[in-house]
Length: 157
Image 1 (cartoon, helix red, strand yellow):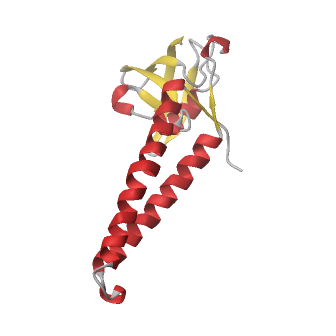
Image 2 (spheres, helix red, strand yellow):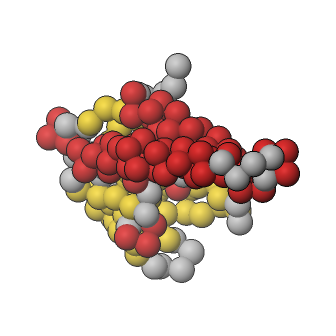
């Protein structure tokens, strides 16, 4: 049994669209590649056949993994969230206490992570370290380079 993950409606739709693409377009394409390679004769020395079978294996693994994620996904009702503290889907503004630089992030599920566009995984070290904090709180977070200290400047939805 997998762990429940919370997504925005948009994030869950992207996952479902990706699954549909894999099942309805990629799977038939790979199946056709296998059939074409099989028609070329001796399978023991047929590199195209072995490559296509390996691609099929990777594809089926990805489909199974995606189905598992979708089956345990829940859409979060953001109107019911406590806006006074940092939770998943919070839009937060934090200040790095070492250099004074301020950042804004939205905490999201792992599959929605896009740091370049300000979407930080709730399961990342920084995401975990900020959960439950309120405006004015400080968070000391263990990261690969050591400990970082942040001040929570703003929490919004």
